[in-house]
Amino acid sequence: MRIRTAGMHRAWRWLTLDGRIRVCRPWALLVGPFLLLLALAAPYRWLFFLAYGCLILGLTAYGWVRYQGPRLRLSRHLSLEWAQVGDTLEEAWRLENRSHLPVVWLEINDGSTLPGYSARRVASADRNGSADWTTRAVCLRRGIYTLGPLQARIADPFGVFSYEWREENARQAVIYPPLAHLSGVVVPQGRRGGMARADILQRHTTPGVSGVREYVPGDVLSHVHWPTVARTNRLMVKEFDQERAGALWIVLDAWSGAYQAIVCASVVPSPPVRWQSSALPEAPDFWRDPFELAIVVAASLAAQALREGRSVGFLTNDGRQRLARPGRGPRQLRRILEELADIQATGDLPVGDVLRQGRSSGAVDAGNAALAIITPALDGAWLAAMARWQCGRSGAAMALLIVSAASGASALEARLATLGALSYSFVVGHPLPLLHPPRPRTTLRVSPLGKAVLRSKDEM
Image 1: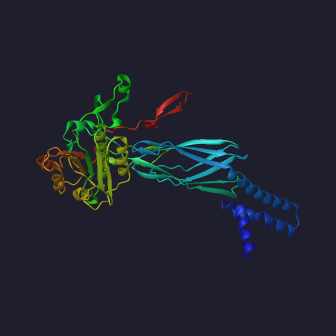
Image 2 (image 1 turned 90 degrees about the vertical axis):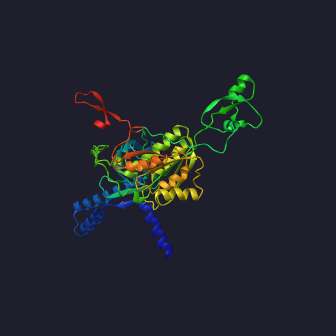
Image 3 (image 1 turned 30 degrees about the vertical axis):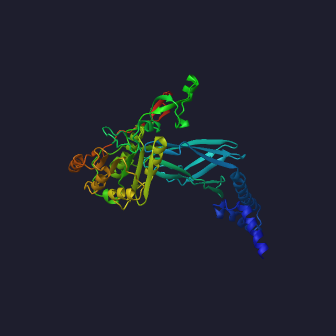
């Protein structure tokens, strides 16, 4: 009995290709046997013709999908695995038909989580041919999203049987917050400490090289300047500028209670964004969200300090501590942007407690580093933690305040001035000039007179 059941199971898997072939219209398969029984009961030659025709139709439909389904290949290629808010994300698709039958229609259902992006469509291809197309979406929200998995389905021309398959190889797309110009913002310098002698300072690697000098015992061999050695036939090493500025720690307030009292300023509604061939609802404006504005300020400040050759660290807590130890260069900016990509205002600790906790655990080394706090909390409860950081050093810290009105932080700014700390205010709803504004894409269209005309996507 078990052998018989196993054999029936293997036969069923062979007939359905492991469940990929399904019956869409079961009643269509019953018409042929019913007419055949009717013809046997009442012999009439045309009933036999109809019965045989219906049976042949069912077998043809089954053979169509069984032959064509396994010979289809659907591939997708993502142009960029990461982008910034405002960028256009593109995916190139290719359908290959390796059968001798045309693909009448292929229904594609995509499970991507990127907001405003849909790869669902119906495609077709000639026999032994292929079809290519591109799907696009404007990145409206930062975050970590998945593209896929996708499910594809074809059917025979009569719609009796269908062939379905699913591809689980989903890809990840990271959308970073945009970078903006922080006009007028001066990054606090802090001080380098622990190295008093000039010769030791010159051996310390900094972004700036002031010149070359002869090698002395104790110099690091990686500092040897080989082009000068080849030209002068003497062993010469690079001499670095003394780094007068310490590291910059950026502390972002992700406490949920800090953003609840912010009232968004009234702004002009944004025009609707058009996608592919249809218009979607109005795109959300992240400048109206105080937490999104704070994230843009944090990312832009980090980019500005790194461009100046500074060492930048990042600290916040949105339910878990997010820490990027001080570093330099584009890789450090990438690390900070990765922490900001999916952060939410879900923290349970005010920014002052986050700073104190980071220092007490040793994760944050204050030393002679500078501090930048980004917060909408105007009660000043975090001033004590900032004062302990400064330790009497003027200009070692600054606050970037997220406010709902331009004059909403005047009292707090006066208190910060007495501490010797810089302060800057950013009003919710007021856009900042982007460092890399998205470029309008142009397309070709044919005018009624037959002339090819370039047109911007913004005009479509």
